Length: 360
Image (cartoon, rainbow, N blue to C red):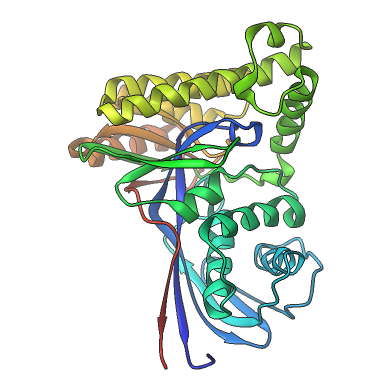
């Protein structure tokens, strides 16, 4: 085993619609992207991992369960949740690289978690399926890092399929690939505004939604009606009301995607963004500016992708127009926010995390 080198490719994700519905038992419509994390590693006694993007190397014993407050906690956390689940993998020496920008709202954290879990699963014959790895990745965020995320990101990274989005019912964990028509182009624009979800309003929003669901007496947003919303205190009504409407939008978006109706899908994205900004208060001026600029430049629709409070927006365009829309949005954004290191990406849907083994 020590002679093998493992090459892991772990995608990021873009969520078309279904923002903040995953932790409320709602529907989501993400896809894995060709932007990815790459982990090249060999088994070892200790864990030694270097991040090319950060220019840092960290090392720890696989039995060390103490968080450090740094990026290596996403690696350490994998060992912690595996141990709690009864697995005892050894260490590795590895290099992290790839094309997925950090802190961009494109799920670099879930991508890293699934890269490490997939590596350990393969190198140490743990026998986990993709759903199991996704659920353990969520536990890294929830129990070790301190971000109360749902399963959207990890499911997309683990279960993505090239040429498809992934329709997921997070109440049942049923999922189904939905074909993405060839004419669809997706421009992801990273605003250059980074976010730290554990330190943001993310956990507060989730707590408010969960309190509202408890008050209504249901586990899933899918069971909430207008009468129950009206009986809630104002803040719970506002936050849960957004989630109810967003859950309904996922159904319309999925139907539009199946039909190849870009106009209808674009309208859903715009409504989703404006509702998210106004009633969940999860946007920021830079994201709002990108969305409106994309619409001005001819996009069918646009919205922030990811949790919000910074990061990236996604614009839906004809694939033939994608380069021009990306350039035009960048020109407009740079004029308004020259201080931000912004950039755009033309993304396509990708397969989920994969591992290749070389050597004897």
